[in-house]
Length: 76
Length: 530
Image (cartoon, rainbow over all chains, first blue to last red; front, top):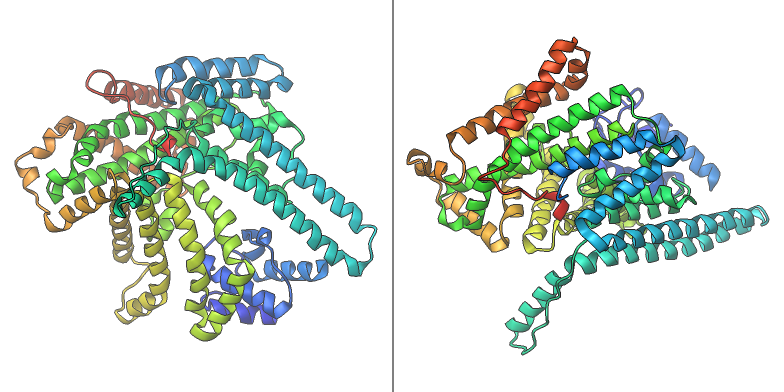
């Protein structure tokens, strides 16, 4: 989780990733940030994030992203 | 029936379908909607209904094909060792991708042939002429079925969603048929997703009082926008755009603004009618507009205008492209070399270019539509590039981005950029659009207002007053909506006298001030032709 927050802060510093649950809904992470984020998460956590996972529910909070990463690691 | 706003549709067709729908038992109601949809389609496009039937049959079959492959894969996965699972998944993914490719090429192929053949052949003829090749291709006249641009996208989204296992393919052919051809959505959308609407369409829920009154209320609001404003502006717009280079920049600016207003009033008014109609059948359809003229940037505008088209392009073109292996690698490399901000923009630009090329072409076969797409591509990409630098500059200048002054500036700037884009969109070809733009910049004058030329183009002062009053009503309602205040529910909660007073006032206003009858030519629905 700590590494995930570091990545998020590196990509888009202007948010409190510990608490924010509306990263997509409030346009804190836009589509360009999502492109960068997905590339970074795949490299860092050795996963493949399929397009079907690119939905607001999976990116609205750091916790949601962490859950998605864990799930994809288990599926792999 | 020529449109949703024809007397035949409003007075005969829609009430008949609503009555029949409620007379029949629940299990037959979806068939009432389906037969009604085909009658509606046939009344506009005649035997071209065959296109819709073919697309429905093929999309149903392709969906089942994919689901069967997925079931076969899942059964085999249970029987193999863990080490072989990855290979098996990959094998079936390849098989599924071939089916998806076939399905998408088939549906997009039909759309390309029907919609773009004359455009491509005209351009080939131009190239031949430029190189003195003594060959001229005969340009065929291909009749286009109503709504093909909309139901084709729904077919493509269905195929992709089955492939991605967001939904299971439906074995019930009539449910797929209703999803593809539901009459309120067939002409101008909204572009629905199977998972969100198909089951509600097929549920056959009886019309209830709330749905009926709220639906009628929304239909009336749509008619107000379309008949009183959009149709009234039509003559002036047609006169100026048909001979754009005759007028000074002042008139061109008025015509461009009027066209942007007309397009919004026509399209959002039709959406009000469509969503209101569905509400009568107890069906909730996705919204297509969210106060677009309050947008602070062009990108924000497109998140609020024709929302279902934007999300279609985002989900089925932008993300799949930008998340493809080559572009992901490009993003990783670019981030290391040019940083977090510009890095993702490289792959993003490629995907964004494809989105806006498709967006332009989807709207029509013409260079002005391609220009329209590229115009927005450049604006949105440059907006993304300059964003952090603009932020720093504003901080240095001590300008509060959240303050009312900067907010107003951002909204006005966005509206101006949108109006210019729509001017090219409406122009009779790209060169006419460029000529009008030139006139706007180099020949801007207010002389036409002083000598009242502006009142001789099809709209007199009364027309402008009626349009102005109606736009004021729409603006006030939009402000409430932007503040999350539901005006329609507010009216519905008022006492019976006030409530019905408002409804009757609205009906009388539309009857008296609607632009129909002598002096007005019925206006074709703009988006239905895209």
